[in-house]
Length: 103
Image (cartoon, rainbow, N blue to C red; front, side, top):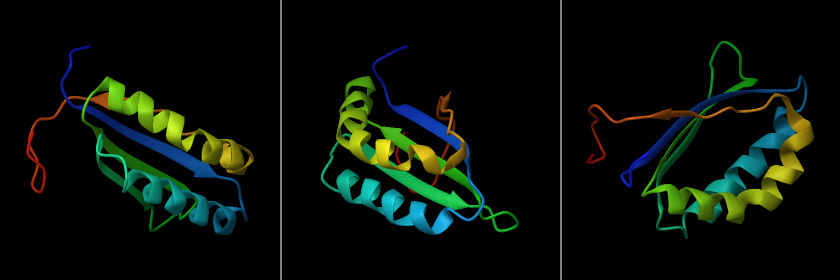
């Protein structure tokens, strides 16, 4: 892998009835990202038809920034580990085109 942007898209499924516990933890991840210059974009979405399905889109400056992000959010990941029915597995992507972010 090269030294350019690192882009991850992932899908996870929250255990039935546990979404209310998860949302504050996800927001706390974004609060950490606000102080992390290497995390360029981090967005989380719930499916309208199935709000227990969470999609995550993240753009990191490089692999080092991805590693730093992982270190910063590890305590929160540990807190939410039991809330997932299906853990988010990242799909590493290469940029093609976008509006709102310069690739």
